[in-house]
Length: 216
Length: 216
Figure 1 (spheres, rainbow over the protein chains, first blue to last red):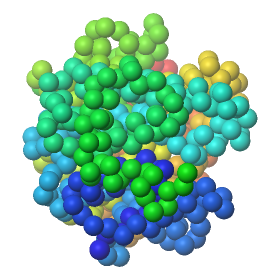
Figure 2 (figure 1 turned 120 degrees about the vertical axis):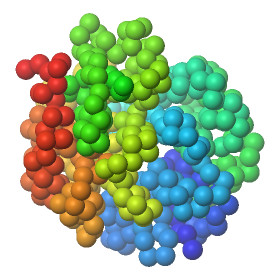
Figure 3 (figure 1 turned 90 degrees about the vertical axis):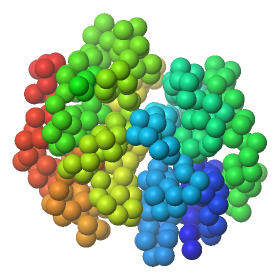
């Protein structure tokens, strides 16, 4: 049985929830509240699962996997039905590059511990924090837009006519952007793919507000 | 023929140089100066190669690949000799997780455009910029240290007795840490693996100061 340690708002957790749904794999949901009591991810009980103290972690039997991209690649290797990566090496590289353009160029700059550093160490006010957030979203999504727009392999989804690993990364990033009221009109291809994804139940069911630990 | 668009100090470029050397693949070195004239990566000539305007890019025939991890996975799929990923899915996930703990948790916070934002937009002085840099190195490497220390699969290298994709990521990050005089004594396992890697010519030849575009 698969067990996912997740926080409803964590976009890295969201990526893995989408992948699990696309694969049709049932899993147990283990909530880890990133804010309550200084962050449950830092508690010893969770550190025994994931020494890094970050979500998500995926447990299969007694083994723990970390890092959303590594987890999704693992799922794709172990459960090859409904593949999340295309067959050819060049196409696989392209799908991974889109995912990494989000995972390495956008998300790390806007996660909780970075925002905490901006507020608590650099003493930035909310306006400056929001400007930071929107700057990296705008720059990063413009870059992803170019990757998608310029390539005929972008069809209904980031790559072709079926969802791939890249879509698992794109959708949570757009949720974050919307939550912080970031302008998204400069990324029409990204948004078209996002809407297509969100028409599917596998993406819908993975959304933050539908998770057992969701809060208003 | 493979052609690598690279900047000697770019640690993402450094990762790919190591992988190419470990695979024994010759390549043409195309320098892209990230500082000169506002950054050659932004010039139209380079944007035609890589629309995102970042290094590295790898060209094979007329095809361009971006994102260091996607490039290295591609090389490993196309040139399977001297594999950079182990055979089993669990082991592969572990190697990728170590690489991603560096690629997603440390490096994105300390790259050139982030440091430029800290200086030019947030008006941080050098002391505050250095503290930022060292904070994410210290936190991130402590995490990588835990991943390596707690796992019997760490042997001479991050995973086993031969270099893997994880080592391609670890070594450039340590070069960066040393350049900014970050303390590294809290990560003895990381440093032991680093020293082992640096005893090999494939890693040595990839070092920044040995590249054709190196500057003092």
